[in-house]
Image 1 (cartoon, rainbow, N blue to C red):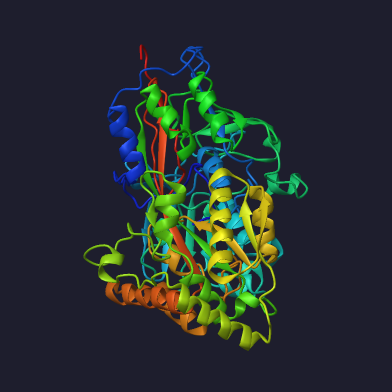
Image 2 (cartoon, one colour; image 1 turned 90 degrees about the vertical axis):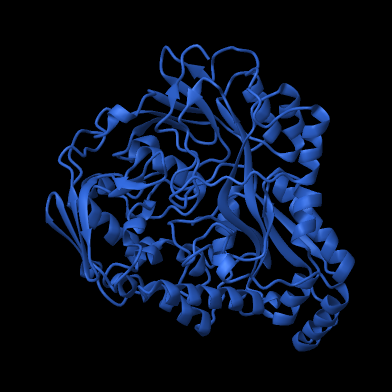
Length: 565
């Protein structure tokens, strides 16, 4: 799914089910035993009791965002922070409910066949200015997303729609897209090929509607500020002070407003500092925060009820495969692969409950035919082998015609886990291979910009699922995918991605994913680091927050304030 910040921030999307893995790392487990505390203990205090985190009188829940949303134009958004916000203020044809099931959104009913899909829009779907959401709004949005002039990195996710890929490549005009407003409330979609997961796609943010007249009125600034967005979801943004705060209030025109029980989601703080977040929670200023290894013990000492959740994401080192980059050399990539140990990273460096050492770009929760994909297609692994790593390094130098490998730039986020992770890799690659790793720390938005520009040799990256199908990971390094920031290009991998896209036979599709996994390992496309676990605390006066791997996460649209807690 989408680009994610490499820290303990919140995440998005779910496999249509709640995911939770209750394994603890050895260090965290020992800490629990020493403190004599239980994960199931009640949250005994929220700090000062000032009541600012939860205000029952006004129906306000106060929260923190880890990052400034880089992009609230749904046709262009790529990151989990923006998608979390958009998931609260916008709604597509379908949405995920509190049980992580696909349910009607703007569409009250639909039919999907091998050649076309028809969606019937509900009469009471409204924009935040009271005007109806129509089929024309979806036609305009989808055309905008695939228009080459938009340069959307998510244009590829529309390729299930007839002619979308050809349009995105500049080979056809945008009005050739196979989507038609039969009337205001009927949307007809011609499919490029039979597709087994189209209903899951239309819940994704790139498929959200955009009203053309409003879009044009913003003069190219659509989604840049609170007043340059039009909302059709449960909330609307009423204030956005860039870099400081973002306030959402209940949208009075939302068709399903009876399920929205709070009036205000006030993201009164934007900070990724874990200690600042912990203190805000401790002082009763915010109703929810994630925890890091640095502040986990403090949470245990407070006796708070700790929640755990596997967020469905995979983190990895991505190489730059562009011409002229030394990391294009296979032997260099192989040397780096054999010099690193994901288990050491997880258990000795990160040291947080629920993290799983990385083995594959396909995470462990993805479903295969009869069991999980990874059970049916075990991930090939490479054991750390310094001597073999040095032999590959010598071969790389010979092929590159270099006496020494020049300094390699490792692009990374500027946050606690990224800092620890990049410094670990810097020291490890120096010690084993003698490589000079130059760490380039950037805030989230700038890291994304540098990734897109290819301004790196290696980058600490992460990916979360956009929809509930292995293809959301399987096509990430297809040559046409603009989220393939290192521009890896392999016709064999592309061929297997096409099989996974076009086949409706479950076994043929899973065989294709198995081949994609093999190629990614053998060609050292990326180096999986870990699958992320989230440890978090929430104010006991709220209930109904939903965690998911696919869809907006955390989702506060069903939250209630519990009196007397």
